[in-house]
Length: 336
Image (tube, rainbow, N blue to C red; front, side, top):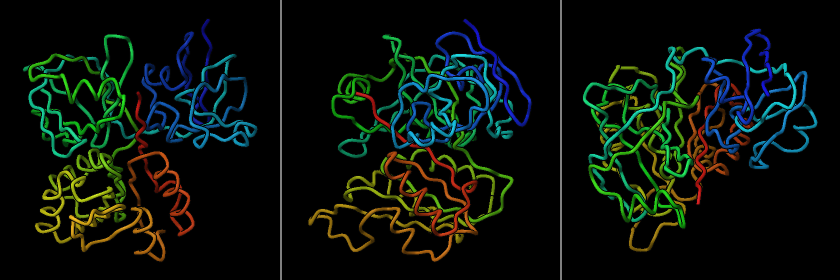
């Protein structure tokens, strides 16, 4: 069974074959709908079904509540057509025509930087390079047919190795393998790039980056891209973790701040240990932003971390005047 989908207001049309989501089919057709997590957690792909019916699929209830479904909204990363559709959503025009590719990659280095954080460096075949925008992610194609998504932490110009920051997930099949069994020179298959979380270079607004845990990875990619290309927009990075040991690359953002007058780094610990002797900011990372700014209407925010953090940042920052179109998010979810 195949269904046709028309996007309004652009009028673009594409086909969705059985078992494909609306988003997957759009990507395959080369159409750039906004999205982030691709698993129903972040809400970035939310749009309206103007005509037709969909199966909403599995998603987090906070990303699409029942009242929104009643209004005709759907998460296109999860929804599958039951009929031909007319949908309404904005399209992203700045992906530079980059389409996802499936490629082999070899594990070059495994470096444990915190008790539950591994930095994985991978090398592509010598004649290959992965084109991507800073902030985007790749997916591992596992032997059992499942996928695991991780953000690229290196900037596009620094692409000799692909760098990922992996957090150990309790009972997580893939991360347990990475931490306990994976060896250097292991061959893996990846597909990418994916994601609508990338730098909007057409804007000149100052940027507030909000990272939770390994949400630092795509933000690192974006900031290093900006510094490499001498983009002088003001940067304020808030990085929230539990304890000091979870700031697994503290020297890097400190160096950015020391070397560049337009960069400011604010680490925030939610549960500092007595042994940390922490003198800096404490509490929840989104609250640190709220405490520092009376209004956010002149800023853009790039927020990456757990879905709960992203959700509360989105709603509370809006109350301080942040435009909905100036909030870009990537919500990390963890599969067991």
